[in-house]
Image (tube, rainbow, N blue to C red; front, side, top):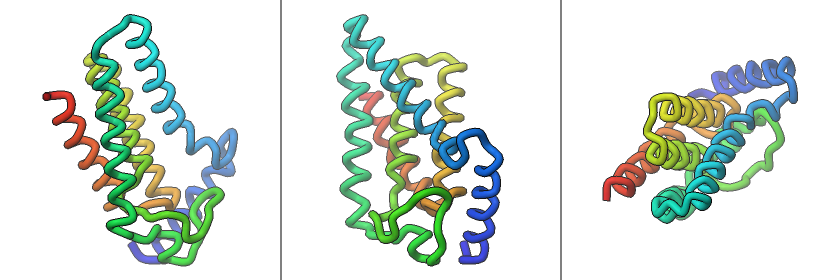
Length: 166
């Protein structure tokens, strides 16, 4: 992506946010919905004393941990720092590294966990859509490059498939 494409994309998203209820905070809704779905699933497992609770906690935690460890090792700069242009919403220049996207990895890990716990099409489709929205908004709002979210989705997908198959 070029600087001009980045600026055009974030300008459009900023304009869209001005028309949405809640403004730029509306872009956080898919992230919150993922978290709520995960917490509700964990709470249900606790209430029913379901043994899958341990795996539903460990697999996403492993995804989050690996992404957190990999980011400084890879050391990729965020697009807003690289292009010297602000993303959509509040930000802190020079804050953190970009690859893999922790939001996208977490959304994927949560989507896989909830889909594993409740393997019915409406749940799997809903979690897939939420995950795709979180990942897309990370790019469209200028927080990450496409490669950052793809790496995160692939990493969480691989860990989740292994974690739930074992």
